[in-house]
Image (cartoon, rainbow, N blue to C red; front, side, top):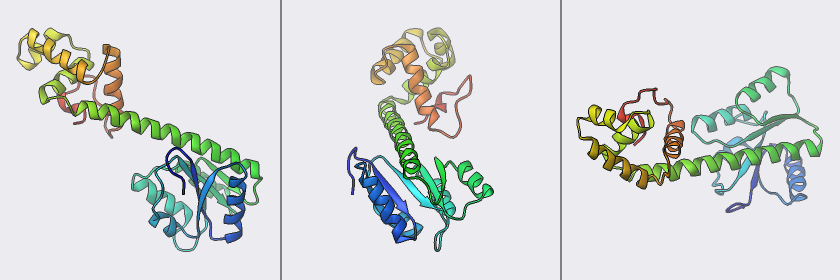
Amino acid sequence: MSTGDSPCVFIVDDDPGVRRSIQDLLASVALGSEAFATAREFIDSRRADCPGCLVLDVRLPGMSGLDCHRLLADAGLTIPTIFITGHGDVPMSVRAMKSGAVEFLMKPFRPQELLDAVQLALDQDRRLREKRRQIAVVHGRYQRLTAREREVMGLVVSGLLNKQIAARLGSGEHTVKIHRSHVMKKMEADSLPALIRMADTLTSAQPTPPSADPQPESIPG
C-alpha cells in the first residue's frame, strides 16, 4: 500500500488476467497499485491517503463501473477515473466522459495509452489535493476571526471603504480600522488583493458563491 506522497493506482476489473497485466505494467514504471475484482470491494476497502487514480472496468458483476463512479461522486469522493471496457460503444463513452472521466479506453488498449492516461489522472489528483490543502489552510485562519471581524472581512472584500463599512455596521471608522488590521493579521494577508484571493478560495468550495454586494455571513464560517 502506498503512503504519503507515493501515488497509487486502484484497479477494478473482474478479470484476474487484466488486473495482473495492468499491475505489471504499472510496476514497470515504478507505480504502486491495488487491485479489486468488484466495485463493492473497492468501495469497502481502506485506501491510503496519497495521490491516486482509478482504473475502472465499465462492466462488472453486481455494481457497474459507471454506477460505482456515480456513487463515489455522490459521496463527495473525488478520484480521477479512467474507464476501460471490452464492450464499449459511443453512448457509453459519452456517459463516462460526461461523468468526469479522465479517459475511456477500449480493450485491448496499447500499454502507453494507459500509462499516459494514468499520468494525466495522477497529475489531476495532485492538483485537487493541493487545492483542498490551500482551502483548509485559509479556512483555519478564517476560524480565528471573531464574528465582527468576519463581518468586516466580508465588507472589505466586497470593495467598501472603511467609512462605508462603519456606516453599514453602525460603528466608528477607527473601530473598523482596528478590526480590519486584525483581519489582515489573522488571515496572514499582506495586501487587499491577497485577502480577496483568500475569500475567493473560501467561497470556491461553497455551492453558492457570494453576490457582488455580499452580506457579512456570505463567507463560510
